[in-house]
Structures are given as C-alpha cells and as structure tokens.
Image (cartoon, rainbow, N blue to C red):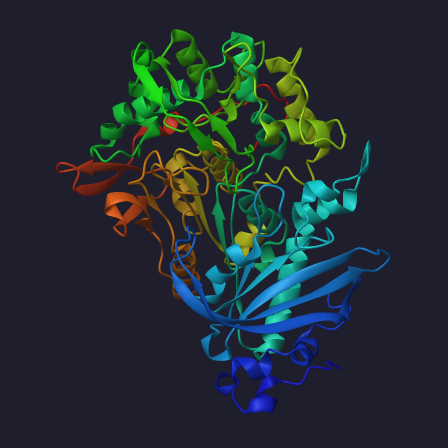
Length: 582
C-alpha cells in the first residue's frame, strides 16, 4: 500500500494550499514514489531537502522569457541495488495554484548533465515541475568527464550509460510519479511530460526520444550534439586544416572573412538586415576569394570561450592586429567549410555553414617569434586524449603526424566504442510517434560548434527510416505531423550571435509545444524574438524545414519557399563509412 497521504485530504483543495505549507521535507518524503517503483531503485529518505523560493526573478535569458516565479526547491537521492553510487535529483515545484499538470525534464551542456537554475525556471513559469539530475557523478558540481575514467585505461562504464541516457530517463520516471503524488493528481488525470535542452542537452533530448519514447509527450531539442564519435573529434578538423596547409591565420583575419561573408550573403534572402538567413544561397552564389586583399584591423581585446558548446577555450588577451586577407587565409577558411574528406576523397563529416565564426580555428601568438601558431581545440583534444586514448588529460599535447585520415580513424573509433551509449543517432522513433509525441527541433543557421547540417541529416534519416518507399514530399508531410525542424537565421550555438545581432531566437518553445500537444495547435512556423540590438523585442516567424525563408516586397513580407537547389546543399553522402551514418 502506498504510504502517501493525498494533499487533498490535508487541505481540501490542492489549489487552496500555500507553497509554504507543502514545501517541507516531511511532505516531500510522503510524496516520494515507493522503493522499487523503478526496479532496483531505493530512495534515501534522509537526503530530502525542501525550501520555498519566492519572487525569483529571471530576465535576459535565451530559452525562456522574463518572469518572476515562486517554487519549492526539492532535492533527494536514490541508489541502485548492488551499487554504492548515489544519484541526486532536483525538482522545482510550482506553487499549487500555478501547477498546470505539466512536467519538464531538462539537460545540460558540454559534459554537464544538468544546468539546474539556468533551465528549470523555464518550466515553472509555464506551470510545470522542472527536473534535473547529477547523473550519479557525486554532486551537481561534477561533470561527466570528471568521473569517466576510474584510472588511466579504465572506463567507468556505469557513468557512460547514465550520461548517455539512463539518468535523465530515471529522473523523468521518478519525477512524473513524484509530481502526481505531490499535487494529488488522480490516476484518471494526465500529467503532460516534456523535455527541453540544447547542445549536450539536445543530445540528451534525443536520447530520451530514442530510448524512452513512451515517457514523453513533447521534446524541444536545440542544436543536438548527436553523432558523438564524429562531432567531438570534428573540433580538431580546423586545426588539422591549418597544419596541413601550413598557415595559421591571425584571429582578426578570420573575423574579417566572416564579416565580409555576412555582408555579401545578407541580401541573398531578399532583405538586408545583417542576418544570413540563407547560408545555402551563400554557398551557391558567393566566392570567398573575393575577400582576398581586403584590409583588417582589430584592437587589443579579451576573448572568452563558448557557453553551452563543446568548443570551449580559456579566456585570453589578444594584441592589436592589422593586415590584409591573404590567399592562404581564404584557403584555410574554405577548406574548413568544405568539411572532412579522407585521402581517397570520401566524405567523413561536415563543417559549419558560411557566415559562422571559426572558433575551432583559433590560433595563438608567439611573442618571441612574432608569429601565429597552432592552438589545439580543447573539446576535440580532450575527446581524443580522454575518451579514445583513455588518459586522464584535458587535451592533446601535439598534433604531430595527425592527418585527415587520422581524424577519420578517430571518428570511426569513437562511433564504434560508444554506439550504444553516446552516439545517439537511432532514427527509428516509432515508439515515441505511436505514443502521440511531438518534436520541435531547432538549430542556428550559423552555429560555430555543432554543424547546422548535422540536424538536417538526422531529420532526413528519421524521414527515410520512418516512411520508407514514400516520395520526398509525401514522407516530409507525414513526418511534419509530429516532428518539425527549424533553422534559426543568423543564430550561433544555442545562442544569439553578436556578429548578426538582428537575428531572431525561438524563446517561447515550451509555450508553443504545450499548445501543440495539449490543444492541437500546429506550429507551421516557429515563434521567435529578436533579443538584442536595434530591433530588440520584435517578433518573427521561422520556416519549417525543408521550406526556406525569403523576403519579398523590399524585405517586408516573409515567404517560406521550396528551393530544391538550396535543399540539395544540405544533402550529404558519408561514403567514408561502411555502416550508415544517421
């Protein structure tokens, strides 16, 4: 018999109960699912914490609008039978009168499995309980790469599977029942279950759609770091291009190439606003050699790493730079954009869209020689050193002897080793689809950390797998009944783009998703807001793939057009692999 005493019995009405009266440790302990609710899981009653938070103000966020919220901040832990690993979960519980029968699972970024207070408020403001987990990594401050190795050469495989998909699945299953108990939701009433995350959080979202499809009604997935074996090693591709071509561009030279590309390709979408909405038209119509000879100048400045992405670098100070764009600099930039091929000319992976910054290609200045040189991208270097070579190291010390074929070999090694845990590219989503689930998948057009084409390729893999034998248009129409992909004009990696400040960003995705799931209102276009610059606050709509944005009437009217030549620029044949690369 369940030990839980219904909240209704305590207060007469769940919605007449104050937050302070229910946000207590004893109340949380009573609302926990029973031991064994998940086979082998035991809850630690003594680990429960609960504190009421009032007037918590959130503004200037990317993934949810400004709001002030009240919630009960809950944590507790559980263990698996036969393991001494303790897993901590956290839940933000809306005030009883604000609860809308919704649960939201959230993920992390880079090697963090959770982003806690950075993501959870985005559920509470819409009446959802928001959940997150430490993955069993020891604390909410520990990341996956902190616990991946037991020692040099020895993988902590339980942590791999927890990070890969199991921890968030467990947090969701536990959280849904805990939510029903806490708010006295009857068995006949539904609690809608959602997931929202970007970058690693996006990969975690796909891990749930692919392996726990029955648990979710809606997935909101941004710029996912799927295809892990390729994605992580790909951060080294720019360095290998520089090494192979024996040219290390000053950062200002690359910045000039980016800015000139943006200026040239901006109007190709029918509107001149400093935003590259059609990187496909840029690829088809712009010749980067036209930038050769243009002068550049950058004042001394400090630079910092990316936020949610895997291309992190430490903060650094750069001296003033000036010069003219060289043919070598353009050759490096073009080779990076072309993507990785092996020595036999077979495609192994893709790169970033034209107009994206070249963060992976950052170089370092040697004040002794007065020359720019190799600066190994930490995300790629750590992946090879720690996750492939199994050394407790944060980066490679050298790329001596490393070629394009070496990089392809690393990609194959990573894909094979982590196929059932981190690769996260299963294209058969039948269970999720048959459960009635819906997906909003978005990706910045100028993402500098995870190639935009990565999302397009997976979308096509799902379309071809779920609807084999059907024509392109018919299978796309069927897929869009429950899965819609949106490319975000000018957006960087899970963020707005300082180089294209007038680009919009889809900030209200949870609201859009809940309307689709709960009311059947289909997002034929995706709501987006300009979050910076002179057009701050203006609203725009994003076209659903494969339709592409084009403005008519002097840039005043948006049309979502079908352009086969543009679509074809996102069609990739990864013939460097014998196995399909979904």
